[in-house]
Length: 390
Image 1 (cartoon, rainbow, N blue to C red):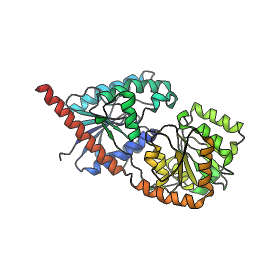
Image 2: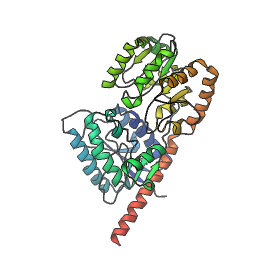
Image 3: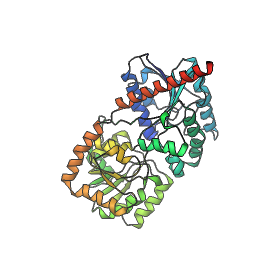
Image 4: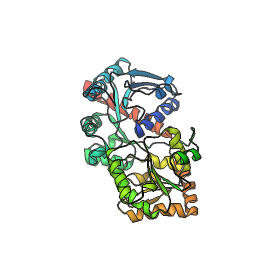
């Protein structure tokens, strides 16, 4: 097969890019390794973090810095960013004779002569739960992600549930959508020692229940906090960037007199997050909706027993390796968490099953499936071009 020349829209890639940042940072080196000879051009903003520009794989990427910023700048920075992504990217892609341009965070060129386009649309949570983003970003997604998905040669999403939602809600042709499962990497990097974390976060010697989640209403954290009083002395740890919803959660914990059992953390370093996974006795994700649910696999890969919501994509991801609960039922949620804390035989069983489950989700497989999607997009674009000439 001919090596591909790939353009990746990475304008979103900043230090706090969250799950979509993990997606990009794991996918790029695997694309390069899966098919030697592959060339990658990364279109980035002025805010590309130095750790990405200096990553072990960064030397194999041809970086193109667009005149755009993401998190700061003038009020009209979103328009400048969009102009760069919709106008400059296809022009540069054509100049460089790229085969395909892939928008990893919902934005791909609407018109890209002679270049195939692929867009990853992880979910439509922002459409049903407007508070999952700020008002400006939600409006931007409406104006960019939906037309990008409708115009792209192929659409990638992370689960069958998400694919069905794109078909039912946006009316996309299901035959144009590729379900590409995400991967998960086992613990490899440095981790903050447990003793240091317990001292710094005032965790004492109590069991830790970890929930890695945005602090947004669709994550269902209010019911999770209401379930804490039935967990004995266990401490619930909630890392993640502060949001207005966090203030509501703090007031709820105060009202329930469980301030001492809930730790609201800010965005934590990679080392601290790794340390929290290793410290946790169990992991919980109570979301109403997830496009994929990568933290579930991250916990499993690290041998942390998992309980999670039975809604959306989570059963598809966790399979038979987690305890499930109805996210609307606080008692059921509480019982599942308590079982993992009290029934150590069950916890050990789920640790074993979880590791085996996580091992099936590799970033190499994600890259291989993504490359297959690129080739489908290229074939479709060539067919459409032939039909127009005929």
